[in-house]
Amino acid sequence: MSTFDVQRVRQDFPLLHQEVRGRPLVYLDSAATAQKPQAVIDAIVRFYQHDNANVHRGVHVLSERATEAYEGARETVRGFLNARDAREIVFVRGTTEAINLVAQTYGRKHVGPGDEILITQMEHHANIVPWKMLCEQTGATLRVIPVDDRGELVLDAVDALLTEKTRILAVTHVSNALGTVNPVKELTRRAHAKGIPVLVDGAQSVTHFPVDVQDLGCDFYALSGHKLFGPTGIGVLYGRLERLEPMPPYQGGGDMILSVTMEKITYNRVPHRFEAGTPNLEGAVGLAAAIRYLQALGLDAIAEHDRALMAYATQALESVPGLRLVGTAREKAGVLSFTLEDIHPHDVGTILDREGICIRTGHHCAQPVMQHFKLPATARASLALYNMREDVDALVRGLHKVREVFR
Image 1: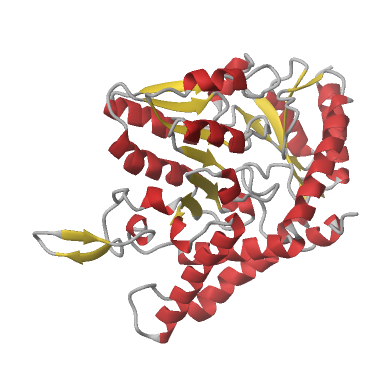
Image 2: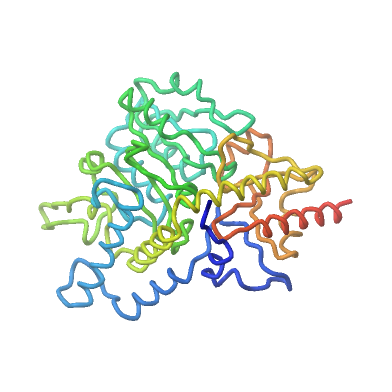
């Protein structure tokens, strides 16, 4: 039996305890950004109050403490993802920068005219545009694994699309628009059987269930701190050491070098080679605090809570007349996209806002999958560890109110 106590968890998130538009806040937009527990807020404030200094450069005590906190955060992330070595953890601004880093370093080195890059139809724009840009730069071709009408990948198409021309497979772990959980371990196995490296967009996955990059076997894994209950402006690129070490730098500047003369530059070791300039120190500290908070709650308990709440929410939304769930994959996490009769999703979101309910409406930066379903947009309710059945019940009441307004 789960020991997860959602009411106690909610007490850790100060933002949730307010009224908006005269009603109790119901926050169902965590796929866009998650709220922050007090432990994260306190860690950032404490860093600024006691330890703030630049890292890796100073011999004074504050610089030493800041460096210890920053590199300690790297070790915390390593353990969270079960990476083999802390050098496999690169701090970036978020998932978007992590994917761009791989595209412009590994990609520029290994992709050329006539080569192919394989992605899926359900990708976020952050896992489409960098690869499309790389194709335009190199003369490569972008290939796409299709989805079916449940919002699942058409796995029968994968082996034919993984060819001798494929230079990398980039796939989301959990679709931000559909909630589909993709079989990335199996996809990685198939790609590696043909010598093809794999990048996984983990922005939506690490908040819902444990992720073990060694078990998945992927070459790269990207995530964003702000979706993981940490600060904005910090994220992680995990890369297998044997992949990272031959990769050229992403940006030039301070701290990514060992020595500079006007004749020659010697670049730093990984991961510092990819972290030019002063890093987001307080972001790394806050991200580490968020991870420790999740680990204290128990990642398995969080996953169990997520599964139970998803099942309850799915059944509740299916009871609303005229509501169509978009994305009915057999394995989902955290996301419920839907349309409601012929009411525009933006109108749905606006009326729900008046009821104090925050959801997301639009194409969710995933236009290709919207085009597959022949929709310009959906309404999206996304769940997190602090959500409860009462939030779902409030959403259902709000949707009935939407229907009343448009009768």
